[in-house]
Length: 286
Ligand code: AMP
Image (cartoon, rainbow, N blue to C red; front, side):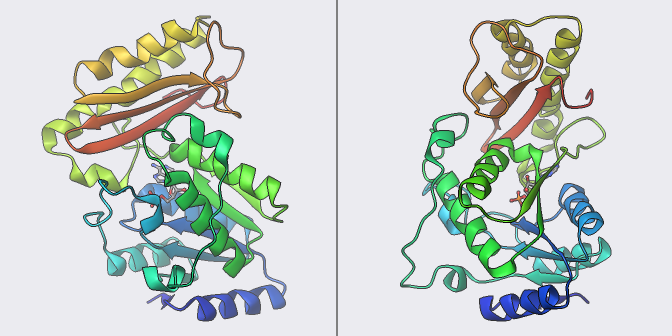
């Protein structure tokens, strides 16, 4: 079975040894309850690096008081088996007290990118993400870290953090891994009832409609957003946003989009909040 460490010092010692031996480390942070999307990230890291380490940590600082921190699915034994099968070399599964000892006071913020999309709905979320990923980066010293494009805003925040803090880490944004019917894989899909699971196909259906319209020359941001929204509004319990935005700055686009634009969705099916997105002019057809 794959080795698992819980102490930050032990994790750092393993990573230091790898680098001292001249090995490039690939790093994949996760919150566990792993699915094939996560494992694709591990395989991508393996292709870029000599040794791959993953973290499994449900990070309390990125959850709001009324969010699903306590009920987030946890299955460390299952995760370890999956990580081993994907070629991961070591798992770091710390406790919250290990990552945030009682004297912990430092936080990392990428404020401008918090203004858009999930930022206003999840205050403090991206600060929690940037802080914990920064801590991991300092323990690991990875050459490469792989993140999923499903959490597009998270990826944008972390790219900005790495750029601004001059961290010598290549960030890889992996395409969204989907179920056969188009639903983006997510640990939170496990919360869905069969009816909600069926209805959640509307997210990728809406994005596909926008991709097809874009391919046929439609450029109006409102028109594209309306095409995405139509199938979702019929079946979701609520829509947090459907946003057409600059794919780098995340600033909403009014008027016409150019040759590349992000369309991002957050919608709720029962109590479950799901994300999806596509970059028009960049992502493969859904
Ligand atoms: P999480 O465990 O949800 O924090 O996700 C850990 C990493 O896996 C993040 O970089 C996510 O963006 C990525 N990820 C989660 N689901 C998918 C997916 N369906 N396709 C690609 N990457 C994903």
